Amino acid sequence: MKLELSHTVTEISANASTILTTLSGLPRQRIKDAMTKGAVSLKRGKHTKRIRRINTVVKPGDILQLNYDDSVLALKPPVIECLEDRRSYSVWFKPAGIMSQGNQFGDHMSILRIIEKQNDNKREVFPVHRLDRETSGLIIVAHSKKMAATLSSLFQTQQIEKSYQAIVLGKTEETGTIDRLLDKKNAITHFKRLNFNEETNNSLIDIRLETGRTHQIRRHCDSIGHPIMGDPRYGTGNKNQQGLQLVAYKLTFRCPVKHQQVTIELPEPFAQNT
Image (tube, rainbow, N blue to C red; front, side, top):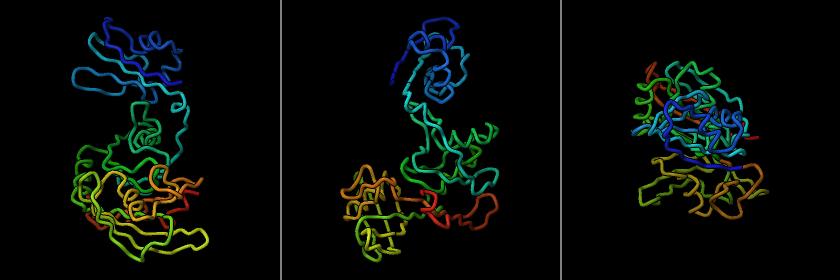
């Protein structure tokens, strides 16, 4: 069942869950579940935020929004692994299928909310970069607004180097640079072939980006005739049952806390996908 509704509040000192239960026809317990999982938002003036408390009181002029999808709400978030915790920021392994941030249908399957819950909501969590939902790998989150700004600046100025590995269709060149516009913007991807499997006709490549465009690696690999295996959106002849074979396996940067060069790396990038 999928339901989307928006309601401008006219009631005085009304309860958000009571209004949504009446308008949607859903049981109160389902509304509570949807609120807990981030599927209900409240717009007050220029500000919109998710509301999770079933007893939240709303005011006339507020706009309540419910985006209910029982197939999404039924998903169970996994326990994820923290690889490095430096108090003001931490590094985690994001499995494939987990969003970097939530959407209108909820955020309980997002990396940020999963981390909040695993920390018993005792630490704030702020995004500083993202990975595609289908991509697995290392992701950094900040635990203060100040650190989020610092890390975001490091990403924007390319002082944090992200390395990827991908399994692609066919035999690539030993090394190469893909310099092709994406969305009318410069986009540069460097790659090196690590090995080629003749039996499966797949190459394992190491990838470094100079730019960070939407789906850059996936689109660039497809553009040279070597789409990533398991990509549900780009390429032909590259579908599989294992999912997207792309992993963000290494981060290299100068730690803004200890001021030392840091390399965090998955020793076997594709082991977590099996």
